[in-house]
Each structure stands twice: as structure tokens, then as C-alpha cells.
Amino acid sequence: MDEGARHRERRGDQGQAEQFEQHGSRALRADTVHQGISRRGVEMRRIALVLCALWLLAPGGAEATERYAKETGKGCSFCHELTNGGPLNEVGLAYVRNDYTYPVPERILDKARRLRSPFHANLRNILGYVHLVVASIFVGTIFYVHIFIRPSRLRGGIPRGERALGLTCMSALTATGIYLTWYRLDSPSGFFESHFGVLLFVKLVLFAVMAALGIVAVTVVHRRMRREAFGAAGASGPAGEDGGGGAAAGFGGAEMPGESGAEPAGVGGPAGAGRVTGENLHSFDGTNGRPAYILYKDVVYDVTGSGKWTGGSHFRKHMAGRDLTGDLEGAPHGTEVLSGFPIVARLE
Image (cartoon, rainbow, N blue to C red; front, side):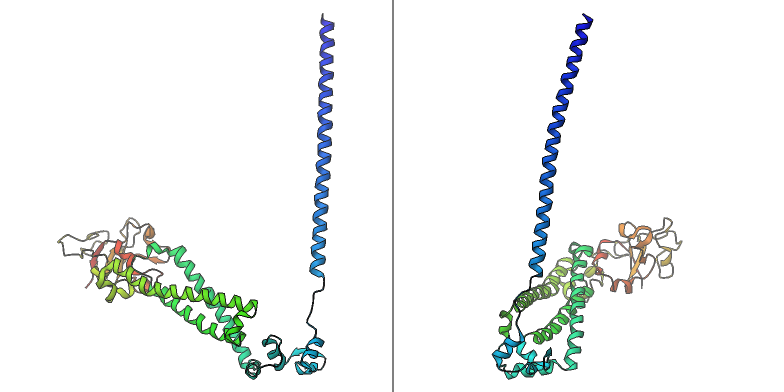
């Protein structure tokens, strides 16, 4: 009985071994087929790369100098500085600007002579660099306002600094762009006679749309934002220019100390004085548990509870307990941000 059981067990082991061997052979064949396909794919990619390289390196058609000489009936020295070719002279430059058409109009010849002068050569380089730098500043300002300041914070309108920078950039881009366009094109029809002209035309249209939107933003939209934030008086009065001024215009109608008979916040605080004055303002610096006060145009604001004034420091750049009138004038935001803070005192 035991011998029969052992015999069956041996047969079972042999059957399992045969199954494993069959599965292994199938897997080996599948792996071999997969490797063959992979090798063929690699070879096809290599062949495709070689064909692309040959196509790129193949010589293309060229406009030969002899052809131009035959069409114009002139020698090489007519358009080149050397008798056998070389750099173009003013006639050759005018011939190129006239889309390789001869004869060349006199106005294009005159313009080619002027453009070859050192004055225009240097002026083009300078204005080209200025154009690129101003364009970078302009685009950077747009991203800065929309990403870091965020339009939702501009409750009192667009800050004066950003308005001035935007208008200055648009004016500089317009002035330099006019010269650079005149330098490259000889007539309005040049916008549609080449790929460069078409791209330049599209660029000018996009810039015109962007400039129009910018002018609307700094005029109509800005006034409407100030009107909604401060009322009609704040939009047209002195406070409407920089977002600040008095309580009614710049601080959301906040009640000034003494008007309600209540003692202003912070009085009798750590400074030990009865009221906040110019002499003890530095004691309210927001450190060691003291309240954080700031002064703007003789008005003291309590910024203690603001997350942007942690420890009496505003982004490690401005400290509480100081007169920030001059600092706020150059800030990226307007004084509309002060409308959310309680007024502690008004210094006479």
C-alpha cells in the first residue's frame, strides 16, 4: 500500500515537472519573439533617424549671384562691395529690401543709404535692446500683479506705481516699435509680402489690443474700483489718487478716536503712556506680546491681528512701531489695505 502511494507520488512529481518545463519553454519562446520585435523596432528608429539626417543635410535650392546678374544686367560689384561678391553694398541692400526686384525705387535706395550710416546702425541696436528690456518689464509687471498681489486685493484701484510703470512701458514700446518697424519695412504693403511682415502685423495688432485694454484698466476700471471702495468723494478727491487720505475717503468710513467717546485701543498698553503719541509709538512694535501699531499720515492703525504682521514684521521688510507713510507710497499695493485695520489714534 505504501509502495503504491509512493509510486503515485513520483508520477505526480514527474507530471508537475513536465508542466513547468512546458510553461518555461512557452515563456522562453514569447520572450524571444518580444526581443526580436524590440530589435526590429530599434533598427527601424535608427533607419528613420538616418533618413531625417540625410534630408536635413541635403543641399537645397539657392539663389545664385549669377542669376541676379543675368536678371539685372549688372556685374557683381553693382550689389557687392567686392568684384567677386562679398558683403552687400547700399544698392544690394536696397535690392533685397525691394524683394529682389529690379529696378529699385529711388525712395528705397535713399533709405538704404541712410540705414547704412553708423548713426542708424547704433540707434537700431540701442532701441532693439530697450524694446526687449521694456517688453520683459511690462510682461513681468502683469504677472506680478496677477500672481503675487492678486486683483482681488485691489479693492481701492490699481496702485499708482503699477499704473505709472504700465503706461511708461506702453509708451516706450510704442516709440521704439515705430522706429524698428520703419527700419524693417519700406511700405505698408510690406506687412503682407513676407512671413516676417505677416508675423509683425499680427504682433502689432495684439499689442494694440493689449494697450487698449491697459488704458481702459488704468482709467475706467480704476475709477470704478475707487468709486465702489471709497464712494464718489474718494474717487475724485485727493485720496482717490493714492488710495489714502482721511477716514471717510481711505479707511472705509472708520470712526476716528474721540468721536464715539470710547477710549482708543492700546491706550495704557505696554508703553506705559496714557495715549499713543509720536514719542512712544516705537514701543508698540508687536514683539514680546506688545500690540503692533503703524503710523500713516498722522493716523495710527492697529495691525496686531493681521497674519501679514506676525511678530510686528511685514514680510521682514517693514517693522511696526514706525511711521510708514513714505514706505507705503512705494509699496506694490495702495493704501486701501489700511481700511481693514482699526484706527487707534490720530496724532495732531
